[in-house]
Amino acid sequence: MSTQASSRGSRRSNRVLGTLFLGMFVMGGSELLVVGVLDVMAGDLDVSASTAGALVTVYALGLAFGRPLLTALTMRGWTSATSSSPRSSCSSWATWSR
Image 1 (tube, rainbow, N blue to C red):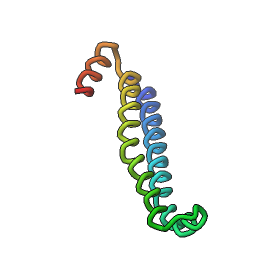
Image 2: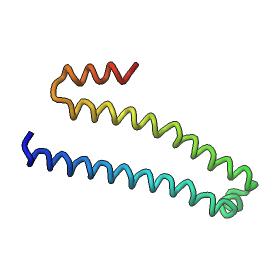
Image 3: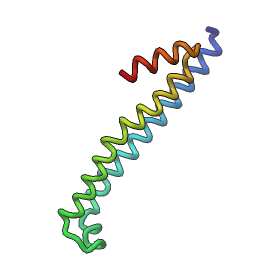
């Protein structure tokens, strides 16, 4: 592999990692932000604070189950996009899906 191709791959990898980091920071921050305004939300929705807290729990559970699902879906595309041949892509998918 040439130095130029290696440099492009490294830049792309850094960009992808930076995007993932920023996305995780925003999603984690939004979970904590809601806790700070929980009383205001409860008052606006005319429900108790514990009921409004259940909304935070549902949101957190959605993220807990949604993140691995999205990771699995994007991993499939990443594996096929970075493989050098269709055969290696199929073998990676077969290994991952077990």
